[in-house]
Length: 194
Ligand SMILES: Nc1nc2c(ncn2[C@@H]2O[C@H](COP(=O)(O)OP(=O)(O)O[C@H]3O[C@H](CO)[C@@H](O)[C@H](O)[C@@H]3O)[C@@H](O)[C@H]2O)c(=O)[nH]1
Ligand SMILES: [Mg+2]
Image (cartoon, rainbow, N blue to C red; front, side):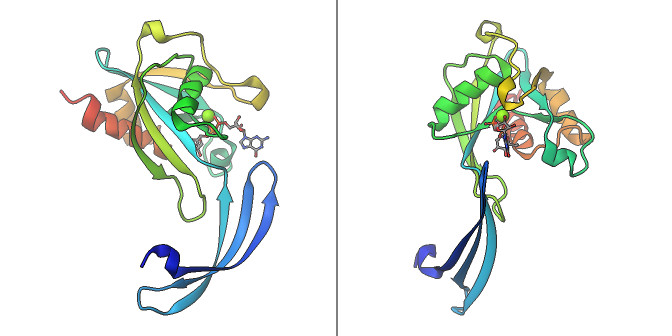
């Protein structure tokens, strides 16, 4: 039995269709005991996304961004948020989108990107699946200062950080973005092992 056979959609109500889409869905789910149970869930659909760790193996550095994130601010963060470059797919293929974000947000032209995993960012309420990439960079790959798209309100600071400093920033609570922590831990496990 596939999971499809355990889900029967009863009602789908559009709550908001503005920049992104919020729906309220009522469905029956067949529990592991065989009993059918009605559930209601709100799902927020912003599409899928990409994120990228740019790393310099010899220098032992990574490229990160700092930017204002209203949802984090309103939930207690009185600071800019440190993140890996990232963006929504908006219809593009993940490889294509990740190259574009690297150039727009941090000013690097990347050639080979390597997908390392994908993950649902907040599966209880948000539909988003994030594609995680890594790529090496060097000084020659730098095209401009980065910063993002002014017209979209982006005002992105670019940081070049030693990998050990970045890991210490997680320990001190200075990096608290989930995708960023995942990629830095991946780097510690697989990219910068001595
Ligand atoms: N007008 C308007 N603009 C919005 C809204 N929400 C986001 N934007 C703008 O839409 C653009 C989206 O930028 P991207 O670079 O494509 O996406 P992102 O927000 O960086 O997404 C990444 O980070 C998120 C936070 O960690 C992740 O959730 C997401 O998966 C991805 O990794 C940004 O300029 C943002 O300000 C909105 O409700 N209204
Ligand atoms: Mg972005």
